[in-house]
Amino acid sequence: MKITLLALAIGGLTAAMPAVADEALPSNLLYDAGKEKKTVWPLPVKNSGELKYNEHRQDLSKWPTLSYEDKRPTKKAEKVELQGPLNGNAENGKKLAMNTQRGNCWACHALPGDVQPGSGGPPLLNVGTWGYSDAHMYQQIWDRRVANPGTEMPPFGTNGVLSDQDIRDIVAFLQSLN
Amino acid sequence: MKTSARIAAIALSGLALSLGAHAEEVYRDMTPYIDYGSKPRASDDARHTNTYQYWKDNARIDPQRASSATQFWTVNWKYKDPPFNDTLHGGHDAQDRGAELYRQLNADGRFAACLGAKKGELKGLRLQYPQYRKDMQRVVGLEAMIEHCADKQGMKLVNGSYDNSAVSVYITAFSNGMPIRIDVSKGPLKESFENGKKLFHTKAGWTNFSCATCHVSVVGKNLRGQTPTTHYGDVAHWPTWRSKDELQSLHVRFTECNRNSGVQPLQIGSKEYTDIEVFMTALSNGYPVVNPSQRD
Image 1 (spheres, protein in one colour):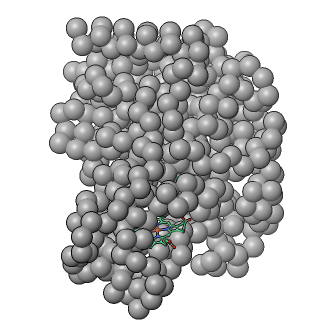
Image 2: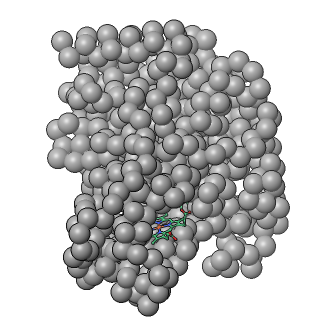
């Protein structure tokens, strides 16, 4: 609390610690309400006693943080059912799977054409031949915790990272791998 | 108006906490704990990743292992430290800058006294941190204390800034070769350790990752060009010179790991980061201080 007040008091200085301005959020986030993406990060500047704050590429304050003031729970695992035909665009799915800021599946899974295959999860090079239904794959991407509560795989659907159509596209891409 | 509303909110939540943490506790996914024991030390890694044997003595690093694409992570980056790596780098410039700033700050001897240096002796001072300060009513790391004491001398050295870390490098180097030894078996440091342990295993962000997701669950696995190593023995070389030309403090490193894993970073010097610092420092117990240092 003291720290926030101090930061406000010296707020005239350019490098003052950014103060959270949203009452609903914890007070000790690196958050700048004046910036488009809100989330900021500190950059030390050579031979200076101040920190410079840069805007992050994404507003991360929307999800639970490590702040003791944060009373937002982890969202419980969501069981979902794929509705109707898949209607997925495999080409777009590939783009999503191999985009670090979206699906980012390649961080953990080996995918065709990637020279730096991730090994945090099983290789998916021929996952299309594993005999998984579209519905099974859809559920794993939406929220893998339904099958394995302790999984390292992010709950892309539950946490609002990928939309219904995004996940359909990725399933179409996965089914095309053989 | 806004500010007073927030004070009220915090005062209230403090009250709720003191009435009973259980009522307040919200559900968070956790990565299961490994056995940290009651007196953690760097060598405990032998029952975690079992890589301790490859990095316990940085004078005897196996060069072949250090340059192997699949095994280098088992050396916990210690091949970046002297004597294996004796190149000059930005950390040495920082040490010089720190010496100069220290001379200005300590002209009347009060800066050293404020930091807790007996008769101005800097040797071993790094090992006293993090520590609980009765006068400040909280646990502080060395960099937080440098900010606090510089303030009293009329110099602004924001925690995490280049100049703050430069002074920290200068001071830390006096303890080179001395093993980290922080006692987390009782009192406020035990509380801080337990909180830090919990935070390290708490999942957060859009990814639902905890620190332990990478440093415990997928340790040694390849995350597209990045390979997380053990979280044991990681604190003895901070602040460090990063190859992206940045003098980085441990808390600034935490913000980087947070960002890289889709988790909102917290303020430098926050209670949360300080608790994680205490946790990780205890996991470095027995490992010798080495600074200036360099990391990728």
